[in-house]
Length: 139
Image 1 (cartoon, rainbow, N blue to C red):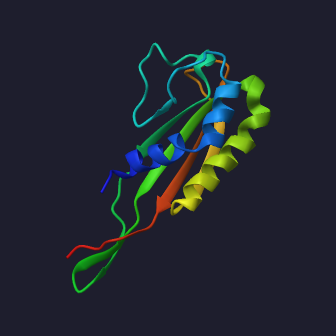
Image 2: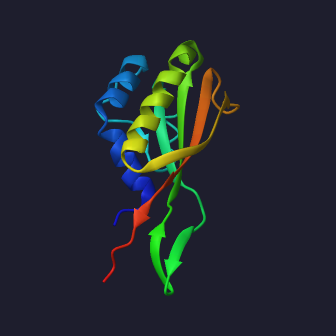
């Protein structure tokens, strides 16, 4: 079993539509997919690197029990991405692609927001929280 943030980052990294859209909007061309499970190195964090995605776990441990055994768990992750303000017209498209990818893999969005990033001039930060569903099949 993978950690939820690694699982979600893998889903997003393997989605060609997401990867292609991000590459088409980015000024700096990269030889890797910029989807991280932690904050990237300071040398990467610049307006010309956007868009990129960061997936982090959300603390908590929601589950359904039966006979003192966990039957279902609900992992939660936060998916943040940054876009340059001149690409603001692509925010909805990227949000929708992320939503569709995660929905197809058992995650549902329950929160979203966006705002100018005070630490990265010229970028908009978009954030969304997702909750998954996992049936435990322990013997």
